[in-house]
Amino acid sequence: MIPVEVATSWADLQERLFGGSWREDLGRFRSSYAYRGSRYLSTSLSRMGGGAQVETHMLRAFRKYAAAPPPADGTVWSWLALAQHHSLPTRLLDWTYSPLVALHFATADRRMMGEDATVWMVDFRKTNAWLPPRFRTALDEAGSDVFTTDLLARVTPDLPALDALGETVLLFLEPPSLDARIVNQFALFSLLSSPVGDLEPWLDAHEGVARRIVIPADLKWEVRDKLDQANVTERVLFPGLDGLCRWLARYYGTRSRPR
Image (cartoon, rainbow, N blue to C red):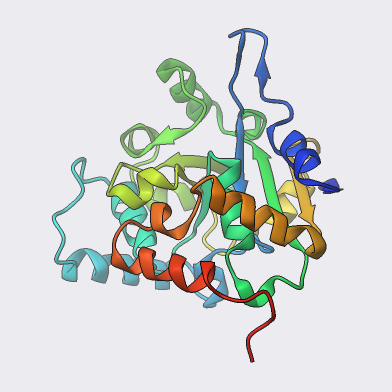
């Protein structure tokens, strides 16, 4: 089971989020955790009730009708990342390398300030141990712990090839720098080999790879205010006028729940 840790203060929360980041081999603090500030681990594809056929049709239509230039490497994985980035339901799940960015998404909804929040942490160096040998070899040869779109294309060219593995495989995919938003959010995606796979049971079944940090409701306002002071806001994470307006509407909102 995924251990549940309850933060008791801002300082305690930081210790939990940044804990385990020391790398003795490097002599540096280099975390191998991906972070997600959400109560849930379900993908947008699973929430809409879609499977492999629906996913294939939607991605084909997206590639056909998208007005944007195609991704530089042209791989299906770059197209999938681009589609996810623009809210098309996919099997990708949003994560970040940054614990503070994850905290932002856990505390950004003012309507939910009276409820506990969650930040999930998954150690992708540990989850890589369950990858098929050719996947691990590709990462080792690249000196990386996560896949890029072109690296993933070398070991599995498309979604049907991934589906055909015959086992549920979890990997992490770093998207191309599509725009300032994806860069500022320090974005990362998880990817299950099954389009209808559920990540939480997979993590439950693999001991020691994940943690769940709970932020109690009575701590959330302090966390939110300190993130705002640290400039971890919609204005930065969603560059442009839309992000600016989202930040202003939240920042100047009252502490009471709106009617």
